[in-house]
Image (tube, rainbow, N blue to C red; front, side, top):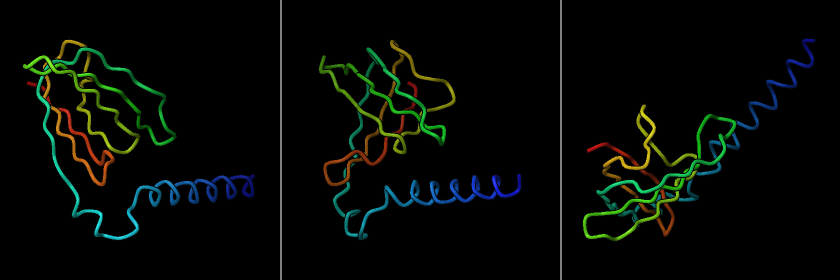
Length: 112
């Protein structure tokens, strides 16, 4: 029993270290190419993916802004802060997207 528990804890530790280190940049110069985009509008659709082992979810959020343009935001497993209330279609939101080197580094969703 103790041996099995030890193996499980060891595998969990290795998986956690790989999970944390996977998204880290190789050098700190990657942070110099960071830009922030804010999209304000109404969610027309939101599609959630599966939960990761660490409780995060992937999502695709489609937002219609005031000018009628549609923005599709694909949220990765470690890039999103979505508030305690799950966004749904029809919610008016402000979404801040932080891009780094042509990839999405962070998304923050706030309600209007």
